[in-house]
Image (cartoon, rainbow, N blue to C red; front, side, top):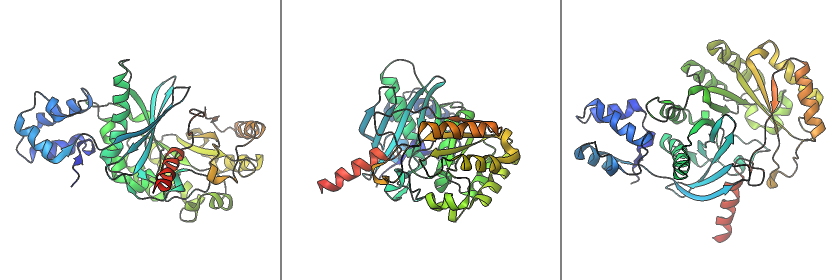
Length: 356
């Protein structure tokens, strides 16, 4: 039987677990400090925690379930990690360097069932959800890598945009957020964290009700139902009207800006017509909206899709600007490695199949 990752426990859950077994609350504070501030790799290093407490933790939990399988480093400093889980499944995690700090993109599921026709993540169907501990440990693995360089660098920003749909693994994603935000631990500010959803409308409302201050991004990629359904099958379950109703609920509840992610695909969704439709869709909520235009990273298996021409990207951007929409074109990173989310994992899985 595989032990549970201790990284999966929030501070409240760890405190409750220890006090239920007769330990004082301060033991949880000590353990938490060792995990996230001192960042030990074994329970035995927690030298101010009593042996009976350490033995119990050792019996029930583990500090490591992820194994680095492949690491790719880009000329721009981007690092893509492929981690092997305890059951042999593979997941991707990416470290990106920005002027404002170090950002990590984490995965929430093994595979993805959302089925976006242009996406590498969906090439391999969902196998299972990641536990909250497996999501937290992605951050820890990257931080351990940074610590090994002895340059006093820390993960300052997190984007939940890796493989999988975070809101399809809602509870574990929320627990993960609680762990990394905790001010006595990693202390990653809520406003430095962004969760991206492909549009699970009911979960957007549930997320809004949390009032967590964590940023929300919506993978829109098309401004009308016909086009969006043709490239994102989730639009059949949550058409744009239903999706935007949930986004408006979020805006009214939180008064926080929403980012719309829009991948520009040549001759599919990159015309001036779609830009005008997108501006109209956002409408009077433009002061709480931002459109992140993303040049498409071609995927071998989706050869019918190509990156928009620079002129088309420029026209799309300028059309939105003229309509008063806040927008920008995402700065590309890691283009000399497997840039698209899911590409590295997909290639490694194919190698495994050929080896069998």
